[in-house]
Image 1: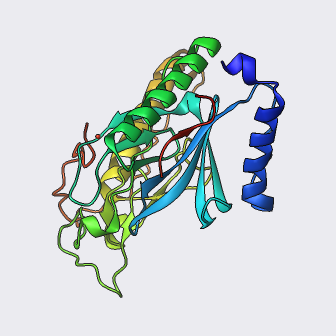
Image 2: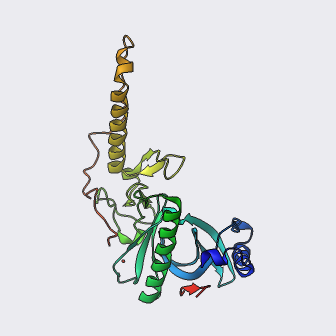
Image 3: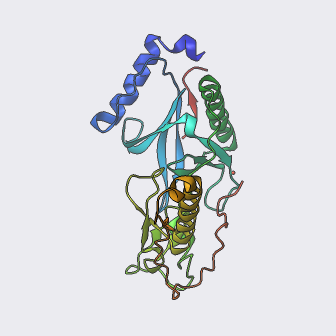
Length: 273
């Protein structure tokens, strides 16, 4: 179906319509072989509260954005390559039903559909596109995913020290490694994670120590591989690579590092039914 529709006039018109809806804030979307398969409004779990977002499914990318004027204008365009996407169904909560998680290497987030049928249709179409792309490119499914951010309202206290209470004066912060809601004292460190950003990102104290340990292991492994070279250089003493400034006064971390807050669970409109 995709091959049949790729170069049709109706497909070109629909892609142009999506470009027009995002206006100057969006990126050009018309590329050879791209087909617009469908669209729909899903509720996205955002940091402050769940919000409706418009989603467009193409055969190679998923796009979503904020709704400015219902069914007419959108902004804050986000483009996600489907090759990088993994899906996970989630159980219902009191606030949101028909949930699933969209996981990528740079960002992971939870969405919900208006009905169970709509969720099944979205997941079915997404999985089919992902399978087709991976088969075409020969790539393996992605195994590294960014942690989803825990919503602000999920906790009133820091999820690391469990002592600091949040208020209008005491801000919530998010660790970019684990997604926990933490206080400023528990997230003063920054760490470079190239997969997520070219700049060092805020991480909690526990994740910072874990990242430093991983970095030290990698440096030691590299050094072992270079031992023949090192031993040939008189007076050469390899550095441990341990630049940790960990203090013995760090508060005890009471939230286990492997705690999972998301575990495994508007209408979809197909253009080409």
